[in-house]
Length: 426
Image 1: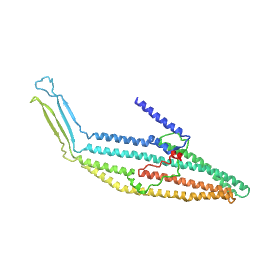
Image 2: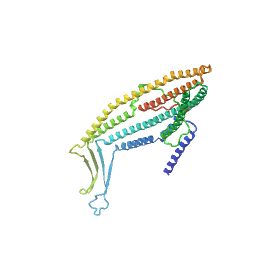
Image 3: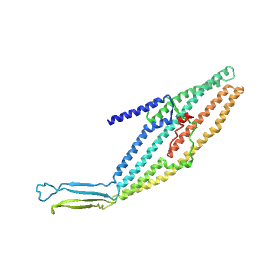
Image 4: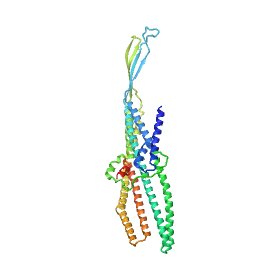
C-alpha cells in the first residue's frame, strides 16, 4: 500500500513538472521559475541530501552509545540441597556494567556531530554550486538569444545594403568587389543564424538537464543582461571567505584528526567490568550477594603506533591548512580584480561608447535626411550599432559568470536575474 502511494506521489509530481513546462512552451521561462525544479530534481543535490541524512542518522545512533548499558542475567540453576529432583529451583540474578574510561562513545559522538555539520555544509554548497552553474548557462542562453536577434537584424540590413549596392553598381557608383563583399557577408550571416539557432537549442537542453528533464523547451527564456548585479566590497566578501568549501573541508579534517588523536591517547585506559548479583550457595543453603571486578592489565601498550599516526595526521592537516589558506586568499583577490576590471569595461561601454555610438547614429540619420549621407552609410552606421550592443551583452554574460564563480568561492548565492513579476509591474 505504501509503495503504491509513493508511486502515485512520484507520478503526480512528474505530472506537475511536465504541466509546468508545457505551460511555458509558449511563454518565456525566468530563472526564478526553474530554481524550484532544480532544487527538487537535480541528481547531485539529491545525492548530497542522502549523504546529509545518513550523517544525521549516524549521529543519532552514535549519541546512543554514551547511554549506560546494563546486562541482567536470570539463571535457574542451583537449588535447595533437599530437592533431589531439582524441583522448585531457586532463581539467581546478576547485574553487570562495563565502564569505559577511554570514553570511546563520547569521542564517537563528537566525530558523528562533526560529520553531520560537515555534510550539512556540503549540501548547502552543492545547492549553490548547481544553481551557480545553471545561472551561468542561463546567462549564456540570454547572450545567445540576443546574438541571434542581432544576427537576424544584421541580415535584414545586409539585404537592404545589397539592394542599395546593386542599384549603385548599375549607376556606376559601386564596384563589383564591394557588391560581392556584401553578398559574402549576407551568406555568412545566414549560416551564422542557422548555427546560432542549433546551438541555442543545445544550450537550452543543457539547462533542462539541471532538473533532469528530457523534453525540449520550445519557447525562449526570460531575463536581462542589461542590469548586472553590483560588485560587493572586497572586505564584505573577504569576511565570508571562511565559507569557502576548501576551507570548510580543511577545517573538518583538522578537527577530525584532533578528535582521533585524543581518542587514540585515551585508548590506553582500560575498560572495567563490574558485576553484582546473587548466587545460591549449597553450603549455606541460601542465596547470597556476590560481586566481581574485572580490569585488563596489558603487558605492552599496543596503541603507540596508532597514537603516532594520529599525531602525524593532525600536524599534516594543520600545515596543509596554513599553506592552502594563503593560496585561497590569493585566488580570491585575483578573481575579484578580474571582476572589477570587467565591470569597469562595462561602465565605460555604458557611459561613453554607447552614448557616442547613438549620437553618431543620430547624426548619420540626420545627415541622410539633409542629403549629406547616403542610405548605404546609414545602414553601415546601424550595423556598427549592433556590433556595440553585441559587445556589451558579451561583457555582461562574462561578468555574471565571473560574479557567480566568485560568490560560490565565498559561499554566497548566485545571481537570479531580474524578476519577471517585478518587470511586469514596471
